Length: 89
Image 1 (tube, rainbow, N blue to C red):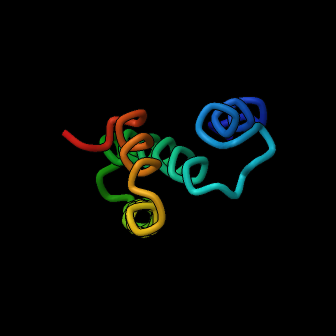
Image 2 (cartoon, helix red, strand yellow; image 1 turned 90 degrees about the vertical axis):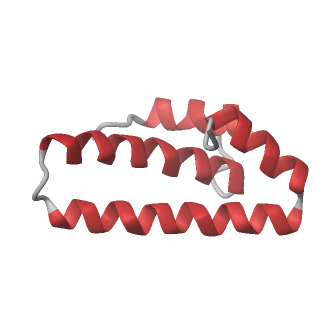
């Protein structure tokens, strides 16, 4: 696997409320962003991998819905995670 257990715990500790807090929106958004970046690099090398392309589109949709949830729930948390991950240009 491209992401070890320790790396995931570190990511959740940095973006979530703790290393075992895997359910927070910020932690999930950070994990999805990591996976999206990994799949994007894979698709640059393997252009005809349509299953991975579909998975990437689904992940982007999940991340988008979590970001929409955060905008409705707490705009400050949304702005903080977008700034940390550099999602807007």
